[in-house]
Length: 200
Image (cartoon, rainbow, N blue to C red):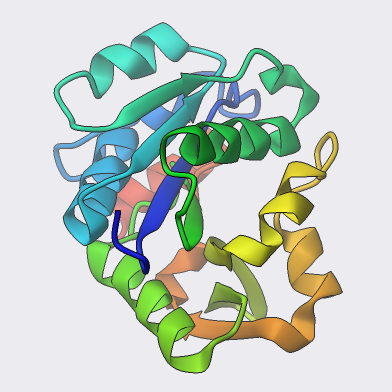
């Protein structure tokens, strides 16, 4: 594996309780959200791309079965996002122990692109920052890249803690990439209807 290789972990384990149906399988522009983000990740780096599933794992697995990705089931998905991050990183390190960094992304940001993933990686290389986050609506969030020195911190997250905790804790080591459409995600039926009615 090349020294500067990066992987992408797609978090898709939640049960979409506020929506009432699996958000990962919602369609936008003739494609499910999970297929969209997986295909953009593949276009950006080739491999390794890992999808972490939990609730609805069979449905999601069937949806992406033709894509060259690695599926990992999080047995503890109900405990919160931290367990999915740990599942993804552990699986990635098992097959790619010398990987330089990982991008953590979610399945309900419909405007994520391969270009954004590449921008995160290039910014990490150019700035030597340990973390590169997407910037939108006066906040930093996913997709977010972590260099390998942060893997242990990610593995030690607990419960509902997400990667944002580390963005605050190590803010002096964070670079930003603009992703204005990152503000659009899908949590409710209203969010989805707004997306379908949008001009994008």
